[in-house]
Image (tube, rainbow, N blue to C red; front, side, top):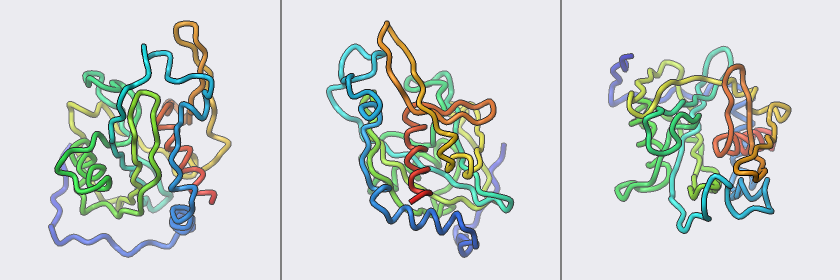
Amino acid sequence: MTLTPISPQWQAPAPRSGRWRTQLAAGMAEEVAREDRKLFQELNPHLDFPPILREKPATLRDAAVLIPIIDRPEAPTVLFTLRSSDLPSHAGQISFPGGRVEAADENMVATALRETHEEVGIPPHRVEVVGEMGIHFGGQGYAVTPVVGIIHPSTSFMPSPYEVHDLFEVPLAHLADEANHIIERRSFGGVDYSMFAVPYQDWHIWGLTAGIVHTLMRVMKA
């Protein structure tokens, strides 16, 4: 896959008309978008940490992800990555492009844009940043700040072969429909626990990523 050359003077086009843009902007201005969420504890108040871990993480690792909404002419979609099975962390899982904060990052938006460029090949100037959501705490010790960004449909993707196995898109309307969000019951080592999930066709979005999508759904409804 090749990345289409982009002039440094490229500017995002003026926002297109669309009810979803109005809903998104209004929702991002509400408290529901800024709420910090301890996702695992929300669903499992009786557990201190996921049973897959031996003990509660001693420290939190700051990270940021981009929720890339592609402004497709027919209807907006959201881009997801299927992580490579060779990665040392969260291998083979569905996620948003993103990663840990680095010392050179000015803020969480910078982290999300840098990681998106590295993983998917979308240059920062191709992202129309809408805003940040509150911190989403995963059960495995990550404190993740989701950044919402709109991508022009002409943008090309160039996924990193080391980090990304596949890319796929889900209609924003599907993710914004509360009826498509479920709570799954699972068991590990004889301990039952619950987690967020959002199935779509052959894809099964779950865990921290599904929890972030759950917040996106609440934002679109605000």
